[in-house]
Image (cartoon, rainbow, N blue to C red):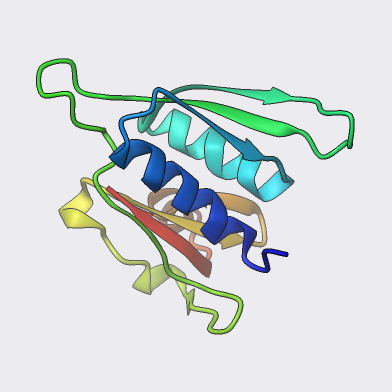
Length: 133
């Protein structure tokens, strides 16, 4: 039984990048689907596909993105910030810039999951889910 499903999701992506896998399959949830959409929109993954399974949970199939010349993953580091044991919240003014604007932070707000830049524009804060660069 895994209590922190988002940490499991991020760890599977991190491990697949380190092992140079092209595709990673992850059990689906609505939060994971939203994070996957954000990663795709920001250009960190090549593509994704939501698949149905007999147990109704579903799977997310993610095609990871690598640099063509060096073979390095576009995801250099992915960190879970807010955990079930220690929640981290930030208001709109204190949302951190990641790697001087080159990375993203994913924020869970009252309007759904979004990047830190979007949350600053809309002037809403929330729980800091993870940092990615």
